[in-house]
Length: 86
Image (cartoon, rainbow, N blue to C red; front, side, top):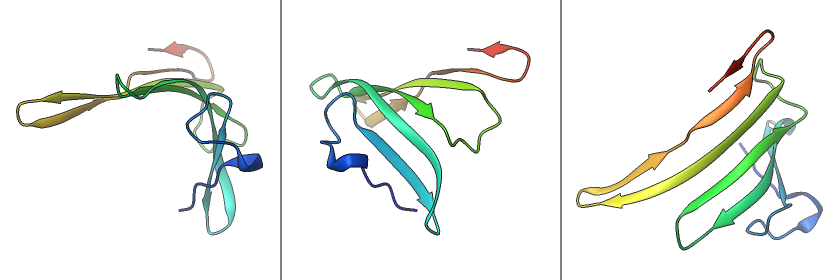
């Protein structure tokens, strides 16, 4: 899988769009909404095309250090065909 940044944007600056491609075919595009490097989190939404069976998807990915290493938390909200799931 490759994940190039569209339009040569800085991948760490909100507004950047990362394309996820498998065998040269884009299967998802992630738009960076916000990022805090010091707090180790970022917020994004997925754009079309999207292979997931959802109409809207937004998530925050955060890394929380602790004594044994780190924990990754990835809460998301998305809209399926008939409902919103949190």
